[in-house]
Length: 636
Image 1 (cartoon, rainbow, N blue to C red):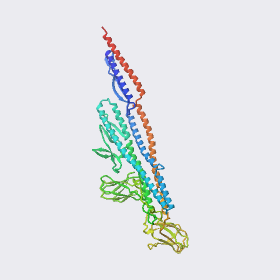
Image 2: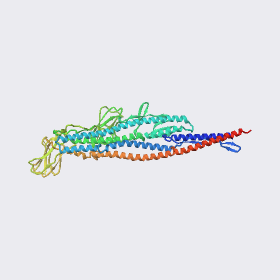
Image 3: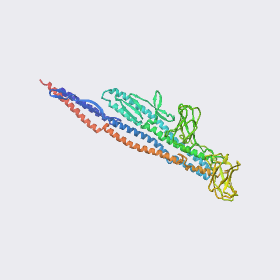
């Protein structure tokens, strides 16, 4: 009996010691990231049958288990990947928001000063001071466009760097998970006993992985983890980790995407399939915020340049010469895909039709198809080029296209960066109109003719019909008149019915007639000579500020910029609100998870006392057994 009592005491001693060790382990790891509280599972040993019944044989230490809830841990991982996504997205988009919305460093002040200089020129078209001021303000506007674009380009470079760094971090975590899968399988095998600390390390790595990218775990029968990312791309399979790589985008090699590394060769993954975490946020920020913002800024720049040039070309400078291009407007960027054997050219033709999207032009061997990447709307097929899509004319370039060739076309991406002032001589600013109108001094009636407006659609050269002298002579009675091109000695019209307020259009100009003419009165339209003080074209240039020439005629330059600022601000606000809400959810989820897995030091302190007392009681039981044995030996 004393032997049985001693054995029972010994098992109690071992159980108490296991409890003390486990409690001490919990206390020492109370602040360890990813640690799950552990507990000792015990059960009675098989009883021993005797004549008096079944007598207990003490306690058995069955296992040391983690306080683990797969559901709560998975909820924490999901909440973490969402919070990391919105934290990263907010950090990126706020940089754009702070840039474009700044009242001092944004585009609006520079644009206001530019058009104010154009208005000042219209007030003093003949002075060098006002002309030089316009060139200076234009230089400032071009610099502001360039500075804003450079900051967006820096953000794009930063995204590339962060994508590369994040991919390396993902690969490192994946390798550690794969190694832990092997160690856990080796140590545990098919046994129900598990290396809890290694399991904690692996689960914590999965949580860390979810900070970088949305990761899903598929538990295997041997306890191993298979890990997938995004929409099901394998990352860890058993003890093997697949390597990711930062690879050049198939359409635009200047930006990095994510791919697999097979035998040293990268295989791209569709960036839209990479979701969650900081990596998903970086890729989505670039495609949904950075690209549209840079394209929007570029569209304002090229729209301003195209419209200003169009009006400037139909004006006249101080030398009596037709105005040239005021701005140097960059052509669209065309990037051929790898292996493409030919080139295409792109030309901006209609500022109002330009969108914020990039385009992919594909050739299938017989025809070209143009896909607007912003919404995947296709145009075509076009059997041949040229073809015009959304204000851009595409033309065949060098080489013969082959089936499968494709090109990325970015109509406005570099617009803000490469917009430049095309003239440096103040006298070349075309502030005057190339034609003027007058009523002959000998006229007896009160007929008047307004200053002609040159038709921007035709834009005839000054040395063409536009500069010809045209005479309107009223007949008797003066209810009709004849129109004669004196320079070309050609009658343009005869017996035209006169109506006060009527509009006439000939040789590329338009004008209005008014008043009451008399027979033989004449009105003349002729080339504008010596028009140093003529400000008519300058007034039209200044009026472009309020002309809705973008978005299909719905937006001015300022409203287009305001829409850009508003769009970025709305995204920043939405990301902030959503991120704050998800941070609250993550906090609540962590509280729920820690209520199961966390170490409560007060509880562990109580356990120490309990196991200490159990250890002392077991020791006392062994001592009693020893005295009983001594008593037996003392019997004579």
